[in-house]
Amino acid sequence: MVVNARGTFLCYDYAVTHMITQGRGGRIIGASSIAGKFGFPSWSAYSASKFAIKGLTQTTGRDCAVFITHAPGG
Image (cartoon, rainbow, N blue to C red; front, side):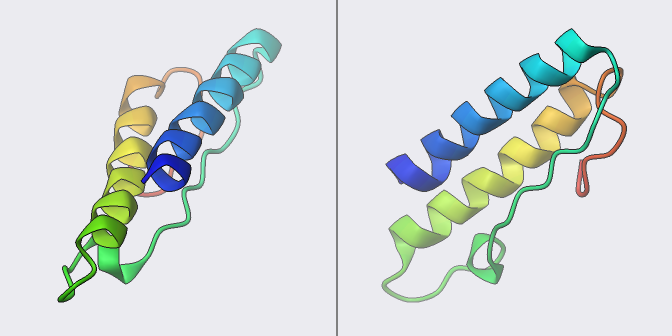
């Protein structure tokens, strides 16, 4: 969970700050898994961490739509 969810959040935070500072926009792409959409038996932590990436990508895309030119799934 720490690497997938928190690591993705920290990378997005750094990337968005950099894009805003440069003033040229950019792209945010989050690599997740089908497990982030459908739960699998005994994979609860993995599925939750992958769903977190999907949610972060969508939310970041919507929150930063003025600055980021493209966020798939956002």
